[in-house]
Length: 368
DNA sequence: AACACGTGGAC
DNA sequence: TGTCCAAGTGT
Image (tube, rainbow, N blue to C red; front, side, top):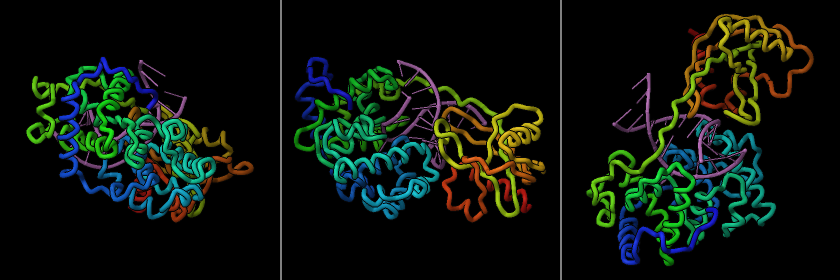
């Protein structure tokens, strides 16, 4: 939430319509809400963790991570006191790793600056890393029952249909407009359930591809349903397809250890450990790897190609060739962002999926 | 404002 | 296979 306009003139609903939507939605939610692990209590810390995990991530994916994470870090204080490497390990495989770095930093800040209590004001909570307009509204409304909008992708979709809005929901302007609508739609009595009801409806009934309008509690209020437009809404600009990139991964051994490289602090898989990775279109990728590693003071004796890995990110598609080799000499100390790891040590590191695939491929090639 | 940022599942 | 996502945020 940035700032909510309080002018009533532009609202797409009357007071009667508002009352109808509130009543039907709340009644429906009381009956049909899912029993999700983060709905067992209203602990702001648990709500916060769940909201960050749920960013761009499906509920079914989040559930096991949520259980493990809360078992490992049961309280805000426990998380704040933990080593970052352990925190990231608990996030391994969830993706968007900056989320957990921001969460960890923010939790530490809450301990230092707010006495360990998650802030209950929009101004304070919005200053925390990784807490944007949606997450701020979600925590304030769900944990503290504050009347603050929590407009996520579900709500944008529900509103687009409910009020027959053809505005592109990818636009900032559209999100702000709908935040205003949401603010004026929230009942004073129960912001907590109303915000969740709106999202739950989007998740369970007013779904992206085939909405279940027949069972929708507010279909009589829905302008898109009345016009038969529910399948045309919401309007959203199409995403560009991922760009293909060719790379080589090094599987460089020194006895029973393999060489790892830490990725740069910014960009894709920022700060994560992985196999030595070189972006190259060179016809002789083996030579490119040798030269590149030599520049880092590491001499290798190349071996055979151990396989290929394909991995699709949101904006990138990696085609990686895994090249085996042994270390035959290191000039001075290993650079800061490089390290050796035994296979057992590999297990203790947080490895992104693309490198997990590569390790599997290399090992199965070697033991084939 | 537009784009980068992970992953797995559905169609 | 390709496409579109799923409870967004940071830049």
